[in-house]
Length: 337
Image (tube, rainbow, N blue to C red):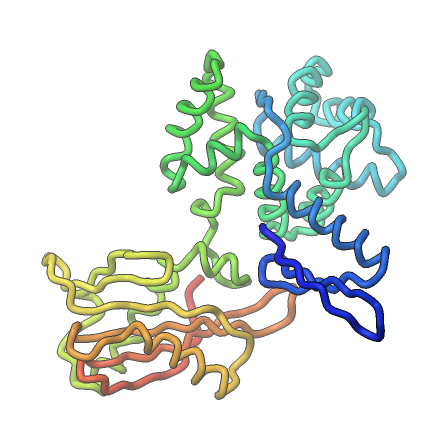
């Protein structure tokens, strides 16, 4: 994040125009400068890990249940770590000695400080208490990224299936003698928040969930292309095709059992609501990736989000383009989650 600085003059007053990550910030007063400094500090804190220790001997489901309890006790005016943990252990008929393994886990995640639960702990507890699981996962992901050990594991594990291997590798590199329960609980905890472990139930969607679930979206969209193939006299059946992911928004199409690529699926950025000008603009952007005569078929997919902020549903704009650039399109509503 490198700011660009420009000095301009308005009405005889020097004004500094600073561009940070493509966003312009105007600094004309001391208050403006303080707000900018606060934002820069927050950005830097988000981009760096802060906690270097890791110790987990707590099942993740127990940890999440504790965070829900933290929110309930916060609403009652109680934030003391010892009191909340003791009450939690008593309710679940667990030994109070378990506090000595729970406390360092909370501390290494930045969920406690100076004997009290932090705002982050209360926030996650609130989201869990209200059943807003996707938002809780997203908040947990940012919390995990603040722990240097967990951050390194998540960066090393490119896929959900690789998390256990990454846990063993990273913890060993830190000089830790591995315990089975510690590896098991760390893997389970990271699977809650790792993007590639996303539960791809698309009944309530967000742009982030769409980005993490493109394979599922392609799978659900495939049967709906049959009608468009027929309109364009393309002699291919969706059930006979396979899809290989080439990059985050592109899949190569081949006939099942062969290595020859005969087409390409291109996925556009999700858009809000069905507005013709926006749809045309989105399709035009995907056209830039299409070259006449290279493949027999191209399939363009644009997710369309509808509904309120709490739970958006998704339709898909599908457009099939033949090798000679003849095209046909339709909007479909996914019926399977």
